[in-house]
Amino acid sequence: MRRVPATLGHFRAIQAQPAQAAELAAASAEHCGVLIAEGAQAVIDDDGVYFIGGAVDMGFGRGDCWSVVAGNCRHMRFAVVHRMVRKFMDEKARQYRRLELRADLRCPNADRWALLLGFEFECVLRRYYENADAHLFARIQRCPG
Image (cartoon, rainbow, N blue to C red; front, side, top):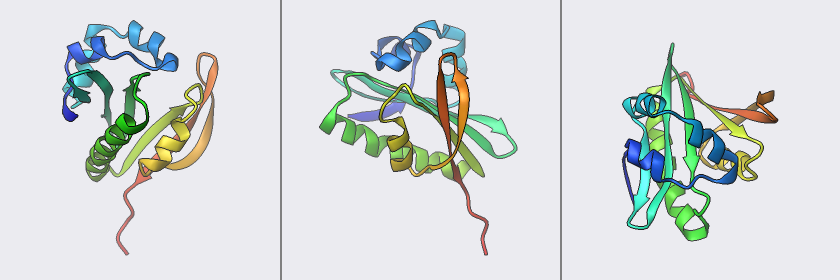
């Protein structure tokens, strides 16, 4: 497995987990192009695309994380993907004063993964998605002293 800059082909090839499939299918090539220009990354191997994600610069030292995870990314394969994504998030966290992530509560392991990626729970975002709440997590650069 390897981490590479994401392409439009990766967005079209990934078989997203059920909670993300409709949103991904509705994403236009233009929208994907913006995410690619912001430095989106993909985790791939010869069998497919398992992760696409990145952080969009929101200004004022804030980054907004997003990701699409493949529905067939299980067990040992997910452990490899996790290590690659954790390294990527560590790199992004050094670029921003505040890195935010919203966990979709329709994805059963989203909260747990956010914590494993080094984010801290902050609050519940009621009806953030059309029919679901989200949890807001953040990684904050601590001030020296």
